Image (tube, rainbow, N blue to C red; front, side, top):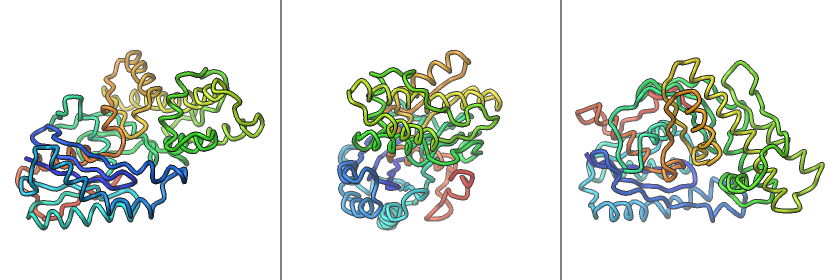
Length: 341
């Protein structure tokens, strides 16, 4: 089965093709340069650029995969929620028209289910048709939550952020420090040069008996530090702030995940989403897995952020389980993943 996936939930226009467990192509048209001058995503601009980018992105994906023709595709998958309304609309309507034109099933995939399935993609671009039971730590610019995953479509969130998502906190702190957008990769790189114990930033909710998160206080602590001490006067001072901030954020993410894994009895932990590419988080989770004796997995770097391969893989597994073509031409998976936000 050849599945074409389309992702336009935020500021990345992406298309991927998967056939029989292999990613044939994965193309991403980024809008980072468009939004950088604003220090964040402007929804209207994102929608406009999706309109211009979606057709060339699909064309490039077909060319890279073979080249293949649209008629070779067996099913079309698209992100249907959550995300920016205008951005989602562009991808969904394009995919709907495409599936109608070539008379193929259209499968709407929940964006967070796509991230959960992204951990099944490996460096050989192959995946298995099963989703093992695991605890998922989903960390991105818009989401931070722990999800109990028993099978594909069987999800139960057990803890979420009470305010900012961790990726959002990274971007806002980067803006405070005068760093470029997106801030996560920049802070991560600088943190590797700094002293993580230089500043005692708070570990919000770390000692509470729950699996909830909060990053607004950590973000505010950095702001208060800058108001009291002024902007860093050297790269070394800047690196120390970044390292201390990252250490505080990562410690909370890892410790809460460790407790939840032990409490729910999971043998596997998957960390997914854009922040899963953070080196500090990957290193800390690797160390925790060795200490506690669980299996830790994250997608390859290219599949951590928003991409269409994760949408295609989720649809491919669902189609494999359905065996026969879906009963409806347009099949939504939203009711199956209602617990995810």
